[in-house]
Each structure stands twice: as C-alpha cells, then as structure tokens.
Image (cartoon, rainbow, N blue to C red; front, side, top):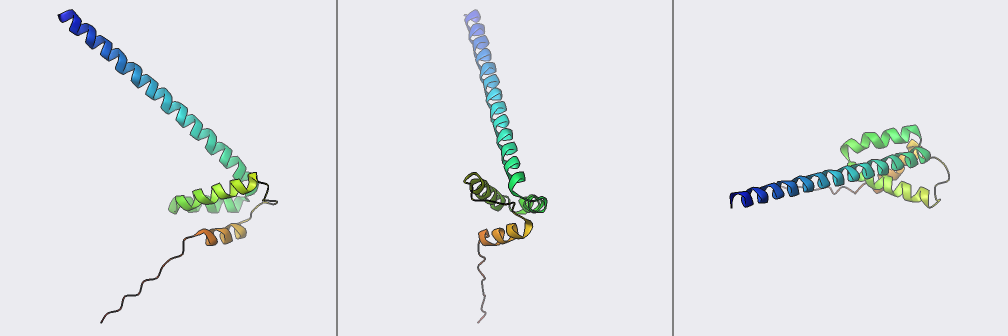
Amino acid sequence: MEDDIEEIRRRKLEQLQQQQYSAQAQASQNEQARAEFEAKKQSILRQILTTEARERLNTLKMTKPELVANVEVQLISLAQGGRINQKIDDAKLKALLLQLQPKKHEMQIRRV
C-alpha cells in the first residue's frame, strides 16, 4: 500500500515536471517569435521612415503606445502594398499623427 502511494507520488511529480518543461519551451518559442516579428517590423520602418521620424515614434511610444502601434501597422501595410514611394520625414509623420489622434471633447461646466 505504501509502495503504491510512493509510486503515485513519483508519477505525479514526473508529470508536473514534464508539464513545466513543455510550458517553458512554449514560452521560449513565443518569445522568439515575438522578437523575430519586432525585428522585421523595425527593419521595414527603417526603410520607410527617416531617422527623425523614427525618433519621434520612439519618443511618442512612451506616452501613447497604442497610437504608435496603430501608426506602425498602417505604415507597414502601406509599404507592403507599394503605396509609399519615398521615405516619410518628420513633417509628414506629424501630419499623419495629427490626423490619427482621437479628437478631444471639450467640456464646459456652467454654474448656476
């Protein structure tokens, strides 16, 4: 009886170790795929943006990461579709960012 309990414990421990190993392997693969995707994205952005425009995006990423992610996706899709013929400079990027920013609603409070 005691040997059976020890055998069950040993099997359970082996099973847990194998699950942990496979979870770590999966996490490693996901991290590697994410790194490859980021490298490809940066490579494409280097081809279509000037240095100043890339610096502006990197600075803006600290405060508005969602906006920058959307802009990067749109720029990459335009480049892959062949719709960008020349590098985008800082002024063009500023204009694009202004168009894509959500409009702010002004609130007025009236005191009676």
